[in-house]
Length: 466
Image 1 (cartoon, rainbow, N blue to C red):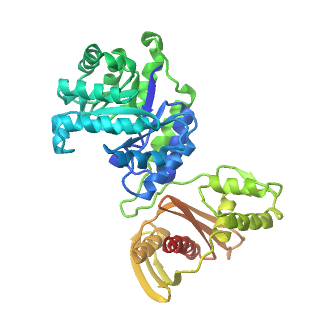
Image 2 (image 1 turned 180 degrees about the horizontal axis):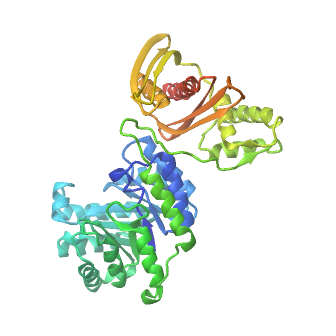
Image 3 (image 1 turned 45 degrees about the horizontal axis):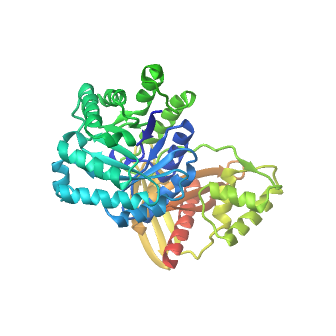
């Protein structure tokens, strides 16, 4: 069986922006599709990175979740701490094998690089299956490449991946490169050989197929390829020529097109040059609760929405839920969001809204002038945006000096008529954790500002407590 390894999320930082929530959604889609391995970005020193890996690991049921480590024991332990909740974890040891990358990027000589590979792989295999990735393998010295591969296998690596990082090889040459290594390194036949190619010459898909014909059994592709092989193209070729290759893939053909489209939509969602906020629209999942549901069921639904609540806050949310559930047959997810925003994590108001002035029209850019009181001290911000609400949120960010990921923004009518009251829910993500605020007003912009400040106060309060 050929293992399909998707690297969409690992390459996300290189060419497009995908939010925390979208990465989890993409992982779930790939898991249902049936890819063998989902690669994620490694740790970059922030708490958000660890929470991202933990969240994806917990969301995936059948696929291997692979995370890269740096060439040191400390990185192995930190990454494993985030990845260990995965049902099928894999640690990846990435090391350059060309003299250019070794000396200029890692400042190591061949002997030191081999020693680092051995130590890091040995540290990884104590926890789970380990993959050694030889970066820039097609430009490396043949003798050192052989030494590096044998070192990794001796240390316990069960998968060895060879990367044409420059994308300089044509399909025939890449296939011959794999065949030659199999003949010169007998130990390669005891592990799974993987391959990956940059798409510099636009022949990455062909190179991967040539490598499979030469004996490779794992390929790195992406549902939304930037500079690598295409999941869609490679999968379709392997499915169409399964008899010729004498092997199979675990991809669900019925889900392929839809999954590719959904992930591509996330990756190419238009994001304004003026605003850091995601412009994507969220759909209601259709999930609902009733008055017959227990406190545990309600708290589980809240957890699935992404909130991490204390036992006390869960009780408050359940009490508020029952009050609403007695009046209506079904309480939907978006209403549960509003309940969490109004009942959970009620904290003192560090920031309070003093005044706001919004200027908008079809011939002028929206402008917001916001004045807040921080513990009684006035603070002001003025900013342009793609609309009045966007401008208002950016003005608040200017005042606080912090940017938070806008995970979701909801607007609902709570009364009817020309003087209808509007309810807004703003969900902000800070350090991977979700915070929501709620606002109600006949002025939907005012309600949105109230909701943002409510969520902001919860973040500020918790950060000050830490």
